[in-house]
Image 1 (cartoon, rainbow, N blue to C red):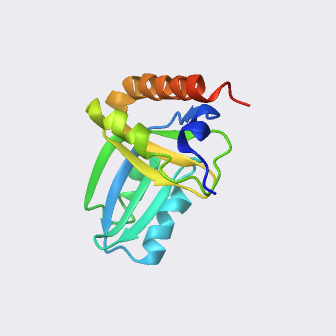
Image 2: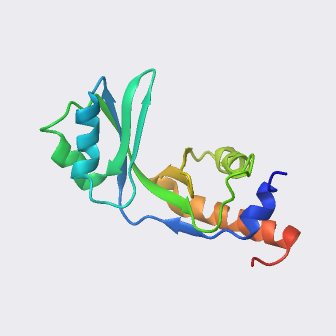
Length: 151
């Protein structure tokens, strides 16, 4: 049986990472070049994605500057702030991010989801972070009203 996503939200807290982040389009970077993104990134949050467009990474701002001389950055997007769930997130929960993504998107806020094994993350343009935080906290409060207080 799958966990109810709204019930899971009722027990969730948010963590907003203090660093500024950038999404980098690294194109056809080699595996070694992509790994270097993480070697120079000393923040606790970073993400590496390889897909049909090549390699992308999300790293904190100082890493972008250090990387410029070592790796070809085709394009960069940001700055972003990263919002993470901070609570027990059962792996079997289905549709967890969908309801909050809809609320954020309906308010004109782009929230890029990144899922880890233990926590889910949203990267949100820094200019929208305060509005996004209020929307997410409101969503959690509504979930608590429906499902009772968090444990």
